[in-house]
Length: 497
Image (cartoon, rainbow, N blue to C red; front, side, top):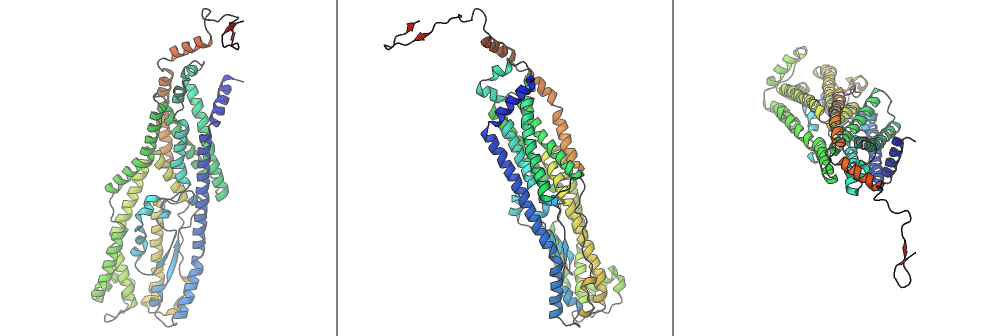
């Protein structure tokens, strides 16, 4: 057996003897499996809710026909009717919750003002947003680096702690190769854990083994390799185990917690937005002000927007449903520019976040997984655009009935357009993958410097020579071939034999 395989076998045996390592690996495996199973249960629950939307709509229609006469004004019925809209989750959604813990998978869209219905979901519980979700992305981005730090922080300094550094330095191999062997075995162990969890996710969720699966596996391995390269660079500084642990944990805090928070704050400051609360209040104030204005103050701007209904006779001395729905539309029109600015600000934030991910591997991996799961901001904005387009299609269908004063008998639920969102399947997030590979290449470029620094450790030659002298003493230091031995008699005195 070659010396390299002998060393690898001994290092692997010593690695597997560490009980705390095995405990940590089992905990990460259990946490990852639990996150995958819990994510699958959440997705299954949301799919059941979405599947029940159409039967609930049929039940609501039957109730409205039961409680209203066929000649009742259709505008009254439409005030209560709620059409379902849904963002269908995929198997990847179970791995990364993303924005889905804040924005719902499905909604009920009524035939009134769109802005309050679309943006009141932005009014979320801040404590829930702060806590986030426990999913597979959390395990991979946050917990796996901690496992890497736990198994690699003393990969070099442990010889100093155990007093075996002179013996290690006396070996007929470079110290950098020995450290690379140790880190390589640990990297193989952690990579096996990550790939085992991903294989479990593929089997449990039924994920297709397509380009997205390959890209995600590549990104996961690159993320793991990046942390091990960082551990090698820290080990090359020849510090104590405590210093190495503090440095690696500090890098984890900076990359995973501190820098993303600072970048988020900077992006929100650079791209300000009014927010859903302000948009909702502004729309409602404008719409409610229409009750105190003359009817023409609402109808004239509305007919200017929709001249096809300008010939409609709308009474100005009493309430009418055409005027009521026109008032809602004018409330939306009042904040249309603000809504566009809000969407543009969110899109700019998404772009700047993708750029910042080029320097923050944890953020890059999270964005890549969110894009595959369809839980990122770009997908959410596309979903909102699809709802706005669907609301317009509802107007195209219902306005002829409302402005012609049709009754409930003219309403056919099967003829009403249905919402379809085709934006759940997202391509690979290339900026995120490029950020991971670029950071890995940047740190990898520093490896030659670290190798030279490790192999040029001061005092290694002296320690090696001293160890060889202790192992193979000189002739003057050799003990006699028949050393005297002593035994203790019953009286306790030494007797030479």
